[in-house]
Image (tube, rainbow, N blue to C red):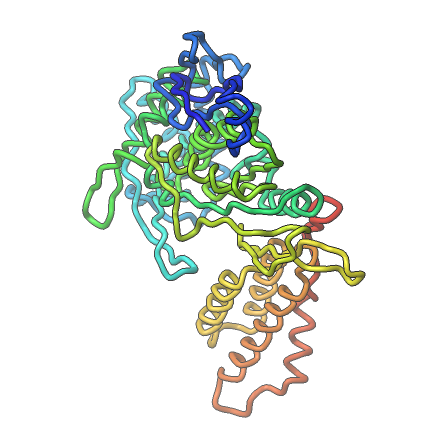
Length: 468
C-alpha cells in the first residue's frame, strides 16, 4: 500500500495503480492511497492543486440573531429547577425573580461584546470502573446562551451529519445504534469487529481545529467568537482557576454538538469517503459520542484501518484508548464465544431455539453491577422514610431501567435486576425497627401493589422502540 500527501483535510482521492497487478495483489486495500493527516485546510488543494469541497452545502450566514430575548426566555423556561449551580451560585428560581430584566441585560452585553462566559465549576461523578468522570457546570446565564447556540448548531449540522453517528442527535438514541449493529452483524458479511474508544476525548479537543471545522460551515464571526469564548472560559476547581486551552467540558449544553462536529470531520466523513472506497470487503462504521465500532469482513483490513485511525487521531490531538480497543471475531461464520460491550450492552453470538445463528444482546455485567451497588446504597438512605414514597421511587427506578435495558432478548437480565431490587427492599424494610420483621406475604402484597412487572420496551428486531 502506498501513501500520497494531500493538502485537503478530507478528500476521497481517485484510486491509482500501484506496482501493476503484482502490487495490487499484495496490497490489503484496493490500489490507491488514504490520507491520514488531513493537510492544512478543510477545503484545501488536492494532489493537482484544485479546490475539493468537503460537502455540497453552502456556508450558513448570520445565525447570531437566533440568540434573542424570545429564545433565551424559552431556554430559561426549559431549565430544570434541580440543576446544580455554577460558580455564580444562581439557580432557576433566583434568575426567575427578574428574568426579563436579566435577559435584556445579557443581550445588551452580548451586543457590545462585553459578555464573557464565567468559568465552569468542576465536579466529579463516579464511573463504573471506580474512576471519576469530570463534569463542568456552567453559570446559569451561560447555560441559557449555550442552549440557544446549541440549538442553532443542531439546525446547521443535522443535514450535514452522516447516518453513522447516533449520539446527542435529535430523533436518535442508543437503541437506534444497538438496532443497527444487531441487524448488520446478523444479515451482512461481518466477521470481525473493531471496538475502539478515544482516550479523554472531551479533555483533548483541539480548539484550533474546532474553530476551523466550524468556520468551514458557518460564516458568522460574532457567533464563532462566542463559541471560542465558551471554549476558553476556564475551569474553577475548588478555589483554583484553571485555564482551558484545550477540550470542551462535559456538562455544558453546547459540548455535545461541538463534539459531534469535531468527530464528524475527524472520523465520520474521513472513513465513509476516504477509507471505505479502498476496502475490498464489507465495512460498516457506527459512532455514539466518542465510542465507535467498525464492522469488517476481513481481519487484515481491520488491523490496517486501526493503524490509520491511530495516525488520523494523532494529527488532531487525540489518541486511541488502547485498553478499550481491540479486534475480535464475531458473526454467523465465526461461532466464537467472544463478546463486546457498547452503550451498556453486551453483544454475543448465540443460536435460536431452532438452531439458527443470531446475535443476542444483554445488559453489560459491569453496568449491572454498578446499578446494583447504586440501588443498595440508596436503599440504606430510606430506612426512616415513608414506605409509600420509597415504593413509588423504586417503581420509577425499575421503569427507567426497563426503558433503557429492556431490549429484545434481554428479559432475563432486566427481570434479574428487578428481583435483586425486591430482595434488597425486603431486607431494608425488615431493618426499620427492632420489632418482629415484616412477613414476606405482606411484603409481596405491597410490592405487587406498587411495582409493575418488567417487560421488553424496545424491539430491536422488528419495530420502533416503545416506552413504559
